[in-house]
Length: 390
Image 1 (spheres, rainbow, N blue to C red):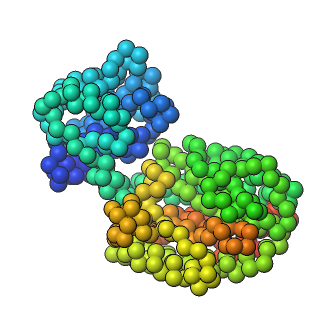
Image 2: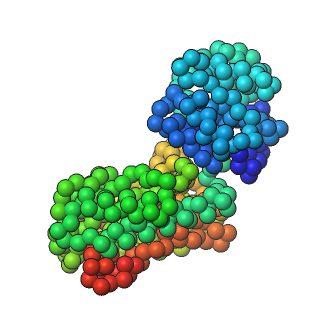
């Protein structure tokens, strides 16, 4: 178990009057243990949970199919294994909780993951216990990263950035979006990621589409190419997007890109402890409007074990309700993305980076590519520096 995360949970329990917290989602299981049980995100009924008590004891609950994985990663943690095809997991969990002295306890549970039917059986099996929502408590804890988490997110940021940048240096007119995907996924794995999520390859007229995978479309001169990927290690994500052109940029593309680059640096300058998320967003929208580009609902968000986490740099219900605000704090990690999906000129542009909040400001984690100018595809074929832009 991750001692620093367990300590954070114990402190939160004291603040909220809880006797234990159960983490039942893949994200919160990974938050407590440092790894994802491989089949849990794929097969929802294969429950894997961590249990942390107010006095700092920790235990694990897991399915027999994943018993060897759990034992290998957590050899010294008390573990209760349930049989997938013969046990009712909620009855086994209830017995484990009672054995930990929690039969009459106030127990926090991330109820936004556990199915309603399972929760009903668990509650019926433990009539003396009181189960309370813990998902917001855990989400709040996850906003402030440990140094270990920041180091991992920095590594992931570099992997995603380098994989995209090196891929764009290889492909050129005549290659396809499938070729981009092939090079990109190979790079992601070769650079050390466990796997990836949300692969976006959108070129030419498809660059206006926010979230699309690769097609058979062939690149041609003048295309704008949006490429995004989230590299993943132990459940943590880093999302990076780069925009490039094939050959000569279309009219006004360089001007719009220069404007988005200015937005990037202004956001980086504004991100610091105590800053208002809403103020940063409003400043971005005001700058975007100078080129009559359409607004978006946010320009950044927390990131870690989910692709999107609080806080949001924007106006969004995830801050509580529309119009509410959040304050930037040290050791938050943000994905921020000055973008315009539809410029009105037949192409979209996006520059997504990873940013860590320091004690005095911010630090760019995705720093492999030079994005001050548009990346030009095929630079490796034409004798250019794969990190440089023409």
